[in-house]
Image 1 (cartoon, rainbow, N blue to C red):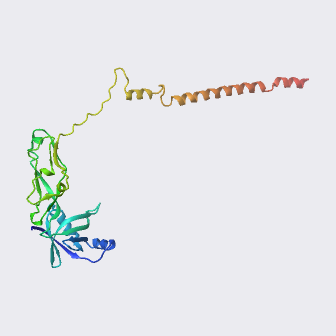
Image 2: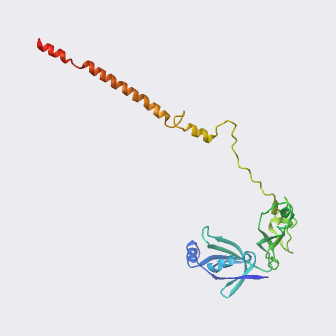
Length: 266
């Protein structure tokens, strides 16, 4: 059984959300170790050291040596819970590894031959990866670090499925065991760009912009300001006529000075 990494940890007895928050504030990550026909144990690991290990792709698919005090235990990483916004790990799930028992773990796929495949080199296709890792079941001693996918013979509109992968001896795919033969990689033609729609103007017709300009010109029918001006002209004319009528009435009702003098003479 090949051991690739070592992770230090310590046992913890405190449980609950409050205890987990205190651990995170002190720079530790709560974890749990289970499997191997033994009781689960709560652990705490260094957050800073864990972040460094998680940057390595092989850490997710190989067996590590979990060291707690003076005890060691072979284990694999089963799940990582990360903070949705920060570069922080919230919780870690680890599984004990027993040499005589099969383990299930996800293994990365390494693609090769894409540039020389007929579908890309001579037919102008584009490679599309439908998945980048697969879950395998195997004994710890037979666990591969990755599975190679050769697409050098793939033509346009062709694809490779899980059943086409070349697996190491005594390694099986969990998906195939459940009757699911999904697509792994395919080569398809690039999508053609749709031309931008262009406006077709009939001969002699006024473009939309020109019609708007003509309609908006001063004095033009429907032009802004034309209706208010016409509406304001009628009240002004009516007001002028009323003023003239009032002046005429004033002249008629005014007393005649000559008549008054004649009455005095009498």
